Image (cartoon, rainbow, N blue to C red; front, side):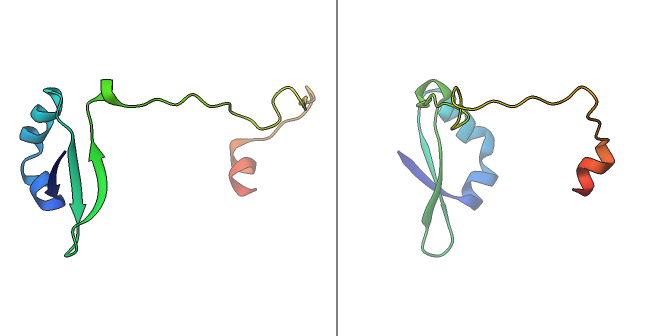
Length: 78
C-alpha cells in the first residue's frame, strides 16, 4: 500500500483517484509522526460485512397508536 501525507493527498487528489481506479490502495498519514489515519481502497476490494440491525429483532415489538402525533418542532425540542 502506497503511503502519503494529508497535504500530498489534497494536492494530488485526481492522481490518487486514478491510481485507486486502477486497483491500488493508498494509505493517508497525518501529523509530524505520520500517524496512519485512513486508507483509500478500490470499492470492489472493500469488505462489506452484513450485520443485523436491532438487538431485539424477533424478541420484542412496538406499536404506535394511530392518534399519536408529534410535530417536527416537538421532536427537535425533545
